Every structure is written in C-alpha cells, then in structure tokens.
Amino acid sequence: MTITMKSEQITKAYELAKARYADLGIDTENVINQLQDFHLSMHCWQADDVAGFEVQAGALSGGIQSTGNYPGKARNIDELRADVLKAKSLIPGNHRLNLHEIYGDFKGKVVDRDEVDITYFQSWIDWGKEYNTKLDFNSTSFSHPKSGNLSLSNPDDSIRNFWIEHTKRCRDIANAIGEAQGDPCIMNLWVHDGCKDQSVNHFLYRHYLKDSLDQIFAKPQPMMKDCIEGKVFGIGLESFTVGSHDFYTAYAAKNNIILTIDTGHYHPTESPADKVSAVLQFVPELMLHVSRPVRWDSDHVTIMDDPTQELFSEIVRANAMDRVHYGLDFFDGSINRIGAYVIGSRAAQKCMTRALLEPTAQLSRYELEGKGFQVLGLLEEAKALPWNAVYDEFCQRNDVPVGADFIAAIEQYERDVTSKR
Image 1 (cartoon, rainbow, N blue to C red):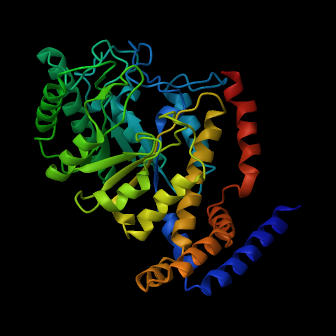
Image 2 (cartoon, rainbow, N blue to C red):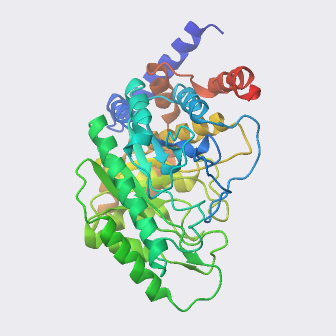
Image 3 (tube, rainbow, N blue to C red):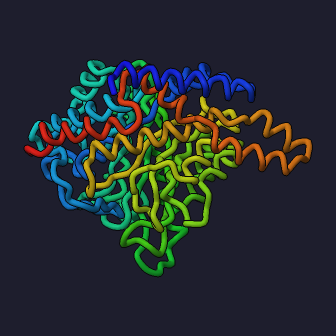
C-alpha cells in the first residue's frame, strides 16, 4: 500500500468518525486541538534504568527497582538525549522532559547532592531550547550513602539537614529552569522514608518530615511549582511509610501545594481516578505520575487499561484539564526502552482522546434526571465509537507514524544505534 493511499484511508476514516461524533454534539476538531495542547512530561529515567550521571553513583536503592537487562540502554547524557529525541519523534504533539537531579551534566566532577546548583543543568536548558522541550525536575533522595531508611524525616540532624539543603538547591535549580524557559518548571518531591518492620516513632518521624518541608518551602520560587508525592510502601520499607497519602494530602491542602497522584502508589483495590474529584476540592492543581502497577508498585509501561482510562476520564469530567500536569513514571529494562517510551506515551494520549470524545454533557443530564439505564447504555456504546480514527488523524497531522508503524522505526533505530552500545 502506498503512503498516499494509506493517508487517504486515514482521512476518510476520520471524516466518518467526525460525522458520527457530531451526531452526539462532539466536535472532533476541537478535540484534536485539545490533544495538541496536551503535553506529557516524559521521564528521563526510562532511558537508563534510573542510573543517572553522578560520578560517585552507587547501586539503585531507596525502594526503587528496575528489572530486566535489555541491550542498548543509555550510558551517558548524549545517548540519553538522543533516545529521548527519537521517542519524541514518534509521539504526536510536543512534550516536556522530567529530570531527576542525578541526571545533571556533571562532566566527570564529583558533586555531592548538597552542593548541586544550576551550573550542572545549563546544558539541559540549552538542549531544551534547541529542541523546543520544556523541562521539569525532581529532587533525588535515593541511591546515596546518606539515604538509608530515612532522609527528610531522619532524627539525625546532620543527615536530615543534608537532605533539606539538597532539596532547597533543587528548588533553586527548578526555578532557574523555569525562568530560562519562560514557563514554570514543575518540581516533584518524593522521599522513600519508612521502616522495614514494626516501629514506634511514627509521630516523631512525621514531625521531622513536616518540619523539613516547612523549611524547604519557605523560600518563594515564582517560576517553579512544588509537588509532593505519597506512597503506600517501598521495597525493604514495607511496614511504615512516613510520607503516606494522608500525610501529604493534608500538607498539600493546608499549604496550597500541588499533590502528586502516582498510579502505582496505592493499594491494589484503590482507585487513583476517584481521588481527582476529591482532592481538587482542596488543592490548587494535581501532578500525575502515570504507570501500571502489576500487583504492586512495579512501574510497568502504561497501557490503555481501565484504571488509566478512568483517570483521564475523571479529569475531563471535572473540567480540570488546566489544573492537572501529566507525567509518566515507568521504567522497564526488559524491553526496548525507546519502545517503552512510545507505547506508554501514546497509550496516555489515547486514553485522553477517548476521555475528550465521551458525550459527557449528555451523560451528566441523564444522571441528574435519574436515568440510570440511559447512562449505562450510552457509556457502553461510547466504548465502541471510532475514537481511534480521531487519534490516527491526530498522528497524521503531526507527521508521526500512524498505528503500529512506529514499531519498524524503533527496530531500525535499534539496528543502527542502540545495538552498537
């Protein structure tokens, strides 16, 4: 089949879908425009299994685990940047890049985390400008000799102050990035702090964590936005988590700070989607870390599963598109890593496509009128509507592969680039 013929088929399918959705009062052109403005924050750590570029880097620790040893992972900053750009070229729209502090451009210099500053991220700023990529940021409390089981909640003043200083410096870096790119840099704060077995000092540890956060957030930073992220447990810290969801939800609401919802950080029977409408009553914005937990926080590649679809649908139903930031957070070293980027990113976009195409106004009217049968019936019919034709048209307009065509492009990149590492 020629490219021209395939393009004509995509356009024809879209025109049919456009008419079908128009019958439900949905403007597919408006949806495509919304998708164009839907910017994911791609996570740099998928490209190298959360290794980072510190000269003194140690083994991955602090409740973090990347599994698999597929050949070709990025070994340095140039390879990581090339892989990210390759992935971006196969994802429609324009997307941000989320950096952890350990991904600084340290140029062979030993820089401890309480010494880091914007100097080591200037080349990232320059790279972002060159490739039209806005940057987000994270402090890094894991994989360090002073990580242990407790960082910002550590009763040892010297260790706790080390991590307070690190996080303050990360906020300075994030603010400088925001100023340079003319758009606020979103900085996420997550620490692994917890206990492996029974403990009796829960209140003490949380007192120290609250005090650390108060010190960290004391300085106004106008060109960055703070996010705080809770968790159920970490590997090796299964019995108690200092920064639980209750803790961070309360802190975010009290201090008007963005709350991060990581889809892998809840009990298996909890619905992250249901939290959107709950917490947006009390916090200004949300940050999402979208991954796929398989029985636990396993960080599998995002796919179009029911929990992800429901999450994005709830955002649209709450009319909260402008109050939510969309980050990805999976790291699978068992498959082609660029392929993981593309699958996960496109899956998130497809879920958002379906959410935007839902006949929400009609469904809402049915529900408020007590028409439960009609709600269920229309929800079921909406699943079978030709949303994929709209997403294909979105891909075509962005000049990226439509359907499974991206697979061949990634296979070629593997033959030419990553297989030679």
